[in-house]
Length: 599
Image (cartoon, rainbow, N blue to C red; front, side, top):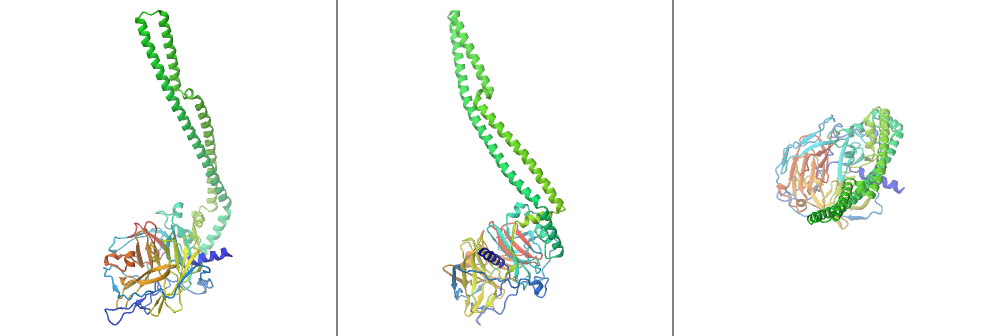
């Protein structure tokens, strides 16, 4: 029961990652144009992204057919989890707002009627059309996303929020507007690399495979049935391959050990040979010295006309030494004579290990032949349909949650300071009642188990607000932002910074407002590679140094604008450890990766 509860908790927490754009909070101004208030205006609320009057542009039909999981709860059981509560985390600094006088880039705000990309055979490449205080940026298709991984009939290729944590990317596939249902897909970024899928020619493989087996379509159901038959009928061959691969791996280890023995034996023999050669050289040198000395003595005796008996004796000694010299040279040329014992051991070990190695290699070749045979049978049963094998392989690499209630949650943020993720459970958006507590659950990034809960109100002089964007910097400071500002400062964006830890919760608005020429506020994220905060809108990315946001000292040159002309819906932006950006866009759904780290 505990495992079941933990599983449901994990799926519910992850599934609330869906990204919906922020509510537009305007900030009321006093009659005096030179003074301002930090009261948040609730009369100019931001609409949900996509046009609800045009179901083909960001929404999907609703009704019982598309709301098949209404009863699934999106509550998170945090019983027994340490909790920090604040009745008001809004810190009113009584400051006057001003707009950061940055130059604005060229951009046509994209509010709907998005461009539809239908051809997955050609990857997309989008280079920014304008940039302010920074260089250009290019995004290229990494993966096209399928119509659905594992969701209800209401799914329609609508992927939204995403984060990167611990070399894994998480993103949501939504079951459609008004359903509050969806599913989460998690992919380890190096998993597809290992399969050879993360290449310049495989961007469409995820979409091809999962569309082919989409159980929510007639052709997909038929293919799924055939896939089921394929898995059953190939089970014995695949199990046999796994068994063989295990045997091959073990035998390769044995071969490695055998080669190591040969190598060690060779070193031992080489050392013995080296010592023997050294001793032999010494003996040869002594022999030659003795011969030289005898030859000199023989010469002197001949001069003295010594007796023949003495001269013959010296000659016999020289002859004997020369014979010894010949034998020494023979040893030098023949290893078996130089170190007979070591040579015998060397030959015996080498012969035994080489025999073993050859035998094992022969067995490996036979096993590989069997694997090839099994693969041919698998191909035959699958009618040589590569997607059958791809689906089977991919299904083991992706973690996909069942359909669950995702609410309106936009925020699943990563805190690099403690390797935890934080989920803002935002069933409500914008202005709320005075009894509403924002709830943010802190979780372990690996197993997604809750470790701490933060409950707080944001009360700005009687106006209560729900938080629905959130991110953290390297030091654990928290940030969120809303599209809006004082009524006399239209076209601006307000950032908040603060802290969220066991000691307390507080957020303060930044008095320097960012010029906002874009459309929807699609999210706030953080790039820990360059310590910058990123604000996302359709066809627009804004970045600001985190330190200047926290110090409330943003200068015009600090604000980087990058704009595009894709006419597509930007849903989320996240960064890997090297600073490359991963951009989720619609329609068709795809993940684009920047060609260089983003500034």
